[in-house]
Structure formats: C-alpha cells, structure tokens
Length: 323
Image (cartoon, rainbow, N blue to C red; front, side, top):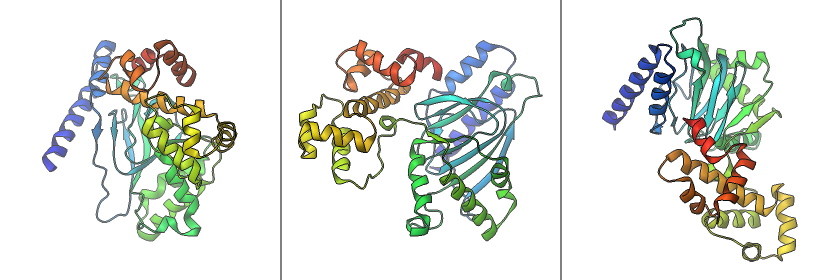
C-alpha cells in the first residue's frame, strides 16, 4: 500500500511540475489536462497523529488539478484565483470567496483558468482546505441531540455543497484555524461548521443518481421505494409496479411522492438515470448510445432531451467540458 501511495504521489507531482512550466501553448495545456482526467485517484488525506483534523492554507501558481476522491470530508474556501470546479457530475465556475463542503469519497477537482498555468507569475491560487473524518470526535458525538444539525450538514455533504454569500469574517475564522492548537482549534472548527449548517444560501451539487445514495427520510414508504428504484432504475418501472412496492393506489402514491420529494415520480427516476449516465460518461468505457440504454432509456432522442433539460448541455458537450 505504501509503495502504491508513493507511485501515485510521484505521478501527481510530475504532472503538476509539467503544468508549472508550461509555455503559452494551448495545445500542450489541453494535452496535459486530458491526461490528468484519464484516471480517478484515491488520495491519502489522513490526518496526523497529533490532530483530530487537518487544516492548511494551500498556495501556489495553481491548485492540484487532479480528479480525485478521499475518505475524508473536505471544507474549502477560495481565497485567491478562479476556475472551474468538478464535483461529481456538477461543473461550474469558482471564484474568490466561494466556500465548498465535499463529502467523503465524492470525486472532485479544482481546475484553475488557463492563465494560472502560463509563465506569467502574477497569478496565484490560494485556498483554505480542512480535511476531517466524519467521526473525528467519536462515532457518537454528532448523534447527540445538540449536534444533530451538524450531522445533517455532514449527510448533505455527500452531494457536495456550494455556499453563497459567506461573510468575510467566517472565511477569516476558517483561515485562522491552523494557527491554533488543541481545544481552541477544535472549538473554532466546530463553530465554523455550526454557522455553515445554519446558512440558508447554498446549492447541493452532484445529482442523486451520481452519488447513488439517499438520505433517510424517516419515512418507511419513501425509503422502501427509493431503495427499490436504485436497484431497478436501469429497466422500465411502471407507476403500477412502484405503487405496489409502496402498498398504495397509483394516484394516491403519485400525490404522496410529490408532496415528500417535491417532484414527480417520473422526474425523480429521470434524475437518477441522468446522474448515473454522467458517471458512465466520465468513465469513458462506453459510447453515448450504449449508455443511453444502460441507464434505462429506450431511445437516444429522449435520452438527449432529458440530459439537456437537466444539465443544460448534450451528453457530448458534457464530456467535452470535462476534457
């Protein structure tokens, strides 16, 4: 395992050294970026024995542009630079002042704009990065009544969260965590998580289908239905069939499902299929046509229409964005 981690580290360092010394050749830039996306890396973000979580300031000419995941959650505040974030199947721009919480084992990457890879040394990238295990204070800590709101924040993070309009004061608190030690350090971090858990202006990023998981709704019917959908979404599931799983009349089930999930049953299934299609598209092991049928659509035109409705681009354009 240690040898494998060493090899991965050498590869990552080599790629970033190449990027650091790139000339203004856009072709070379695109070649290296494409090679970067060829493999999903499992990075080791284990915390040191002296800390319960890791907090650091990352600063350089650009961020580590590697498509990767790790078992720890990651809280990030962008202090300098701009570019494009890739979190699950979500792709969008990031800028100074943005704050993200990425759940465990959720693939992600921060790709700076092209000017950060040129020889011009005037551009710098800087961010606060905090890595922590969901049980960094023990398996029962966040299950206590006073910490339920933090437990829900951690649960939401499995989709990736982007927070908007975070105050400069809170970002400064995040930046100062690595300057403290012991009890004070931990309390400062918990205070940051507490404020983020109560912040109302945010988006969940990766789709339900990509993550292939779901939050406990505390409703046995919804849990039973959702589990069944995840196990069978690749084939046609009629309203009658899923209603029988819920042990309800079809019309009653439709009303019930929309009230709980805030969307129709058909929309829900479509989101699962498109999210899973994004995962398959990024793996690059199959054609768009074969993926269309793999995820449960029975014709390509409907697949393209549903994909564009949810992702604002075609499947082909989606792949090109990641390239």
